[in-house]
Image 1 (tube, rainbow, N blue to C red):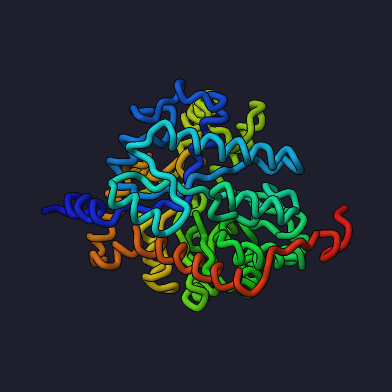
Image 2: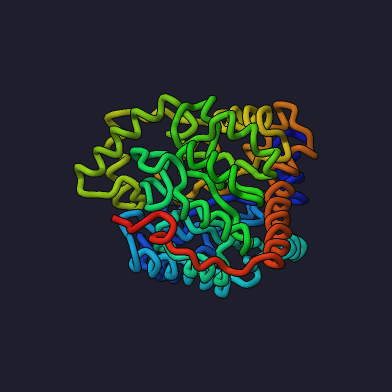
Length: 397
């Protein structure tokens, strides 16, 4: 049996829990949530990275669907757009009941695996989605959101982002209260996209395991979106998990400058640099024809995972591909069917079946289960927080 056959066999027993997939936003941008126009029961190759046949081919057993909204949406607009994202995930689950199963807990994930359905969870990407309201945070949890990324690409009123000019120095007092309330309700604190100072503040405050839903190792690729070694080394004490992403500019050093130029070209064509619609991809392809793109590979991602395993330990790593949230992907990981290629590469590097089962399934399920246990305990000791940002940080300007 070759490595690829062994990988598929392993994934049949221990499927991938993927930490981050932007299909809901792609459906919004491409077809205004018209699921007839993007029926993921059949191949959407060339239009999307994700559909059910390719999820099956990739050995995906659980997916955190990102209910991301852009950071230029603020206030009530951001909240409404997040609700629309949650709504389309519910519509997907209802539309494909034999393939997808709504999951709110670790037990739900295990039930989905037993039923050979794909456990469907949700993660909100960016604290702007709660509009500085702990009540809105709790409402998102009630609707099924099981993690919140504290920031996206821009700072928010209570937390610094990795890719913005530092303003707070990490978390504000209200930011710490957000983390505490997330612990209390059982919503995972996601530290992808946040500044290293915010990572450290959140780790100091959180009594539940944290996650990085789609971030790789800064030592391997020195990009601010990645995780410094001291933070990786702190994960065992916290119990959390770092889920390696596949985005080339975050994993391949030479891809960074090319991406900056490609983003600038997109803006010159009147498009958002994160646009992945077919029209936007044609602009990218024209640019790439003149300026060849540095290409990451499966081995590039394996290099990150090797380093993350060394620093954080095998119990604290996972996978978060960021499919349908990026224009480009590594060779061999071009869509969600590619996970067996990554597992085969790790097998070839000597990873054991036990280690790979932790990477793909066990670690993520354990982290959610542990967060649920922390929440049950905290709920016996304190009620909901009604603190406001004005009370803790002063008036927002």
